Length: 133
Image (tube, rainbow, N blue to C red; front, side, top):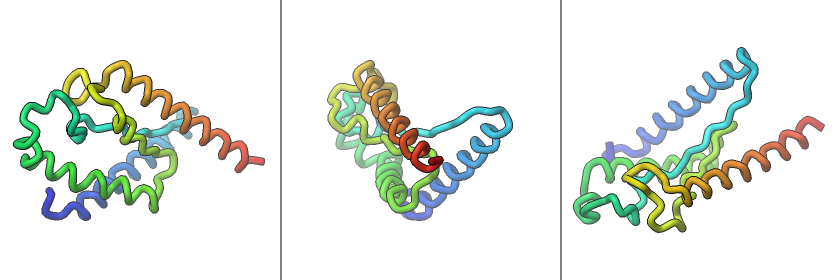
């Protein structure tokens, strides 16, 4: 995968856009609103204590592939936003020891993520109110 990160980033973008289109139609049909939050990925946090051998891990195919695509995707989102899709994947950037295993968050990081979600929803609500005026 790391041999063509741009191609995989575009696939990721298409994947999320199609999923959000599906959610939009489900929401219309069943009367609910939706938001999607791109959250921190534990395997990309090099301070994650559950990465046993950091040097070997950074050389692994999985890490190289993911690390090459995710930053491209995050940058792509800045200039090509997806409606109702919010990138909060940096929520673990100042949180040492934030994982209870390789991928699951501890209460501190859960609280940070919850706060970021609420902030984003609050900001979105203000935009929606302004747009509907």
